[in-house]
Length: 201
Image (cartoon, rainbow, N blue to C red):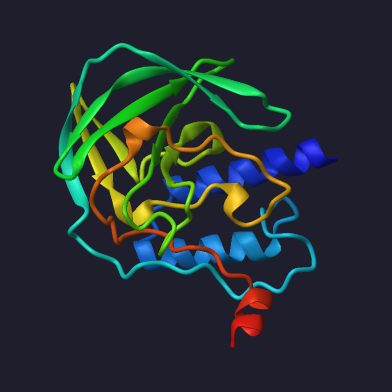
């Protein structure tokens, strides 16, 4: 039953990412998914009053070149998934620094773009955020393939990995080469549960 629930959750994520919803509607629908789906990373029974985001901005949207740069990396999730093996699909030449775009070397594969920046820790999740992880259904919004070697990036869609919400989840985090030396004040902020907000008040 859990496997079918997880398949349903991933299908719901993919439908949301591929929908025509604007950014604000997308965020509202994502909140609803987190609040209601049994496979949400929010712990069952935990009060949930929504995710927090930086204000929408055009500052961190860009069309960039993808430069070929072969390479491989292994990232240990520290959990039952073990070590994830990735090959570099290329290096994105962004206005804020270079980022490696990775391809998961597993059955079916998938694109993976984890990012750390100067907000990681103080404002956003310390382990970094994801711009896309297509294995999980996050297609087309944060990272859009334009054809050839051109890619559109929209950091308004940076989101936290599941381990940011719940210690029961373990995630591959951004390697050192995917660290930007600027503050990307776009996308999702550090998660605070309703319980932690009450205790901080």
